[in-house]
Length: 219
Image 1 (cartoon, helix red, strand yellow):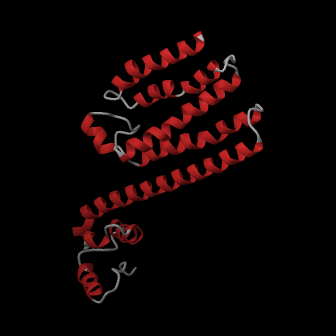
Image 2 (cartoon, rainbow, N blue to C red):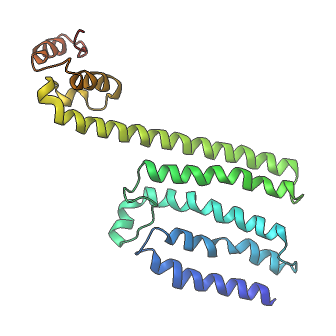
Image 3 (cartoon, helix red, strand yellow):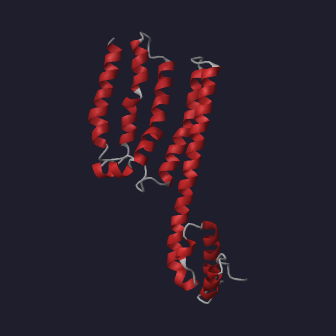
């Protein structure tokens, strides 16, 4: 029918002439690509002979929101290849970092209330909604874990850089503290407070030779 044809042709135009060229210009290309990507529910609804009622738009909205964590997860894994091709797909200039993980987490969380709308408008039953909630909570949990891991990795990287700058004045060997954020943070705090100095280095090395952990300076 004409509505199906118009929707299909509009999606094709948006994908080819909007989303595709924008991939090399701006991360907002993902937003542009999510529009034609969300049209299949509308096309299917119209093709079945129904008007574009609230049910069609609910399914379209769910599909639209879902595409952001979907796109970004692919762009995260293939980030190096995308950069070689000149594609800018991730929402943050830092690439696969904490900001990108937070964006993906936000849209994944938005899927939960959006996915309940079919049940609210009597378009689905409790069984299908129960499955959706279970899958949604699982996906959200995965995003939370990914965000925490990335946030911890960023904290370790910043702390390692900071330790490398302060190591000589505090008698620290940053190589032995890299990747140990809790212990490194405690020692770094003592350096900033003036409680550690170069005289502590010999004691640290003696501890290391004896198989002991570098100890904070006595107060």
